[in-house]
Structures are given as structure tokens and as C-alpha cells.
Image: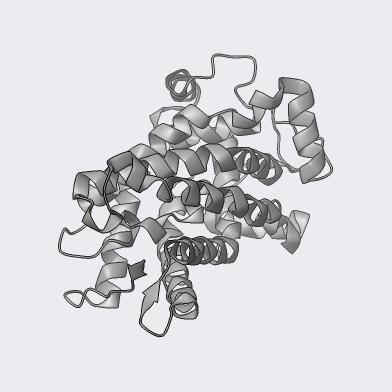
Length: 307
């Protein structure tokens, strides 16, 4: 069982600011890994050496060192509204799942975190799509000059619904994400040979890393298809080889498997796991040790990292 607690040493605004700043720092330091992940997923590096270091080096030489941080400003800006929506939704779901004694089961806690992550991801989804478009484009010949220009251009050229292209994969991908979280946390007592409420800080950190690795691996194919759908546009000069010839999510799954095999659904997984592990380390080390970190507890896994 888990108990809902609020740390009274910081206000809600201060906790949100600390989490946002820590998240922005971790995103900025791991941005090159995010770039390598997205380029591998959408197919830009197909047929070439696709390791994260090779991809980063190739982008550096072709577009300059600043290109390694393409889309990072948008990712950092969306942290604050995304975190605010997720925290508000999580509190609502916790109240819904909490019993009369103020307790909530581990499964309900994980479900509350997953549902809150889903809500925040759907609400802020257009910014995630724009981040993908900024990463995919050539920085030397950009189609979009920034967040607002990209939003306006996509809306005018492709319509409002284009800003939510691939959002259904967020909902579908929540199932393996929640299942992976449950799979890990239901076996933690066996792994550590002790009760969950007595885990030390290193054990909790290892739990987060283990659960992140499992959930990322299970849900990664949905993220790959989502990224391909986000990058799809008849108005972009996809000279990098992005495959835009598919009619929907199912067709995209089929074409990936047909062209690259089943393992093609996991292109970029290595860079993504490195990014998530470093994100967790940087987030936990840069945030205040006096605050109760939502990220360092079992319900903490945000769908933002999975999808």
C-alpha cells in the first residue's frame, strides 16, 4: 500500500518550479541522445551507421554543433504546462483511487500516475509534434523558425488535426507502459528480498531505472510509430529519407516490419535508454533533497518518457 503525502516545506509553486528547472537541466544535457533517438525512429539514419555517437557526429558535421540541441527549447518550455497538468490530474486520480483510510494500492498508484501522464501528454501534444518536426528538419535550411512559426505553419498548411497526428499511439501505448510498471513493482520484494516501504534511496533509484528500462522497451514500438506520424508532412523537404508514405498507424507498423523487420520498431532504443537513465540521474541529483520528488516514487513514471 502507498499513502498520499504532501511535503509542507515547499509551496506547490516552488515544487513545480524545482521540478521544472531540474527537468529542463536534464533535458538540455541529454538533448543529443534525444536527437539520435528521434532520427533513428523516423528513418533519417537508415542505411548508415546508426549508433547515437555516429548520429551525433554526422549531425554536428552537417549542420554544426547547435544542431545537436534542435527542438530542445520547445521540450523545455513544455515542461512547465505539462508538469502542472500532470500534477493536477495525478491529485485528482489519487483522490479517486484512495480508500476511506487514506491508503492507495500500488496498482492504483501506478494507474493514477499513468493516467495523469496520459492527460498531460494529450493536452500538450502539439508541442511534442513540433519538437519532432524541428529535430527532423535541416537546421541550415529550416522549414520552421521556432515554436510559434511551426504551430502557425502546420495549422495553415495541414489543419488543426495535424497537430495531433499520432496522438492515438499515446493512449494505446499506455497499456504496455502500465503493464511494465506493474511487472517491475510486483517483483521488487523478490529482487531486494525485503518490503517496499523499507527500500533505501539507492534501492529506490535502482527501482526507477529498472522500471524505466522495462516500460521503455515495451512501449517503444508505439513511440516509433508516433514519431514517424509526427514527421509525416507533404510540405517538408525530407531529403534525409523520412518515410512519409503511409495512411495511418496500422499501415505504418506494417511498413516498418516489412522494410526493416520486427526489430525496426526498436530503432533508437539504445540512445533512448541512455537518455532516460541520465534524465533520472540528473533530475534526482539537481532537484532539492528536501522536497518529496514525484519522480522518485513508484507512481512517478510519466507517460511523457514512455511516449
